[in-house]
Length: 259
Image (cartoon, rainbow, N blue to C red; front, side):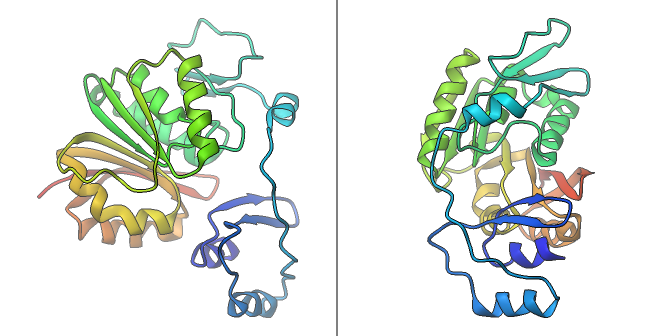
């Protein structure tokens, strides 16, 4: 209930701990007094916000992280882990301030769904909207995509993408530091959008205009309770759901464009 309430007020990242919820919001956003009162009325203390300063997270990452195995087909690891030759796909991610390591349920489900529809990727033109570390773009190239445009509106994510693309020897991934989809239409066979509910709802219309007829849009970053709202909004934009997953109270959906 807290995540749903905070998601409606521009919070876009959450860590569920045993007795608390850590929620993230851009420093430039104002936290409404009404929201604080609503949470207080639930008997939950709203703490004084803390500013998280930009830093290199490598040391903490190296000490805590472990490789991720997905469907016995994909291994996501750092340069400090050993390569495992028995995995058809191996992705090396060195995160800093960026989102997307494979550990979060949303990224995990996106990769699962990409594997499910891997026959759609060879020679495909792909758009990764809010790419973070670039993990999904790398996955798309390893599945055979011929061109992947990856954009993010955070400078450190853009820089991190470049590093990760180089480490994975990606020749078809094009990183861009930008906060809007391109303006041209009917350009992409596949769109990847692992962001959050509010951004997905805001950009469903312009994103579907970029999608070719019968193209696929992979979406995640929202709660199961938001699923029907997103499906309804997608339906108003010529997008029909073809499959979905739920994991750790998060949801992912694949849509197909049908006029």
